Image (cartoon, rainbow, N blue to C red; front, side, top):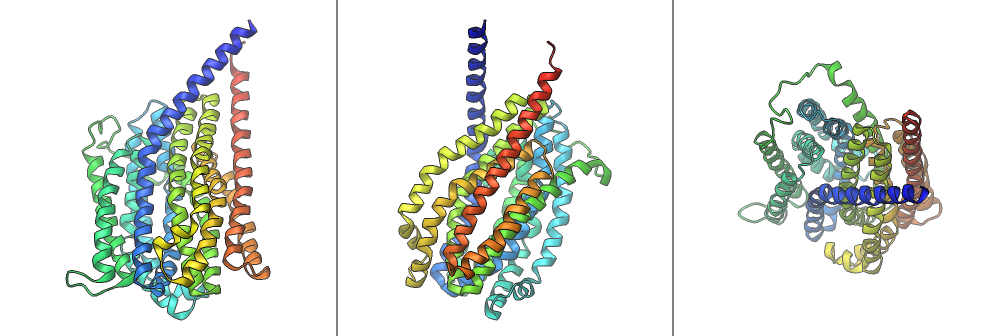
Length: 464
């Protein structure tokens, strides 16, 4: 009897794990490629501007501080789209997904216009953060140009999250491929000055980014409007846009927004500290984290797919599958990141030379890239578990975890290691490694606690 039960359990586990891995690959592959495409555009910007001049690279790095902070905050605030839409699909009510998307679009437009106004004060923000006057001026100009594209950035995020939540990530990938080709061309024209344009350096790269965001938004919107099974997802249905009608969607976003904002605030603090050390250190730190962001985008894609799978299991009220979905996402991420981490450690100098040939920057950047290889597994894994918690609709505890880890711990720790211990830029990266280990332990512990609690509750309700 026990042998039969054990065999049945093993078969169930093998079957479910195979399905989870298959679904993770199916969902995450186009999402990963799309996220890599997004990061590749940033890498091209850094590469082009880095070869134009080290000073312009510092301007670009400074201008990114407020802009990327707002984008990361938006990703969190709009998380309610992907969580509730995937829940609706899992619960057998896909028509509600269209209404969730429309509410998200209204929200995204409002956020984008607000971010546009904030970006107009880029120079003042950078001066308030203690940056050198010249860096603040150049970075402020970059932030203003990027600000013009912020409404389109927030709207394209709403469209992307909707398509991913209904397991239609391929349109985003197709658009991203075209966008990357266009971005390379526009950077070449505007950064270096071709076809009658004056060389514009970092500002030219910012204009390229803004134009690309306009293109991506309208392309994704067109994909959604002509979706073959759009009727099934209520694309053209009238949605309740009353403030009370989508309270839950906003509240999930508030928590995720604060979570993302807290995490990124820590990294923005690192960039501010790097700027305090020197303009060259700021440029080296930017190159390091832009390169780090490329494999990290794989984790973001896996995290998005994990969130969808956990959300679907939650909608079906299947706690065992929910636990398995989170575990599959974490395990797949670790297996993917380990070889990439080894490559970053072994080939740090070769990777640095892609971005700059300036001897000072090469000397500063190479050890940072090597250190970031050690960071990769821990930081990506904590991101996976954060997404799993969001799919589980655990709203506020992840926020508390990330505020504690990336603000209360990391900001003072990075200052202490960089300045008090005189580790400079290397101390900044070492502080992130320690903080990511802490965040992973807390987020994973929370997920498995909730999953086990759900499983126990289901066992008690099951008929004897």
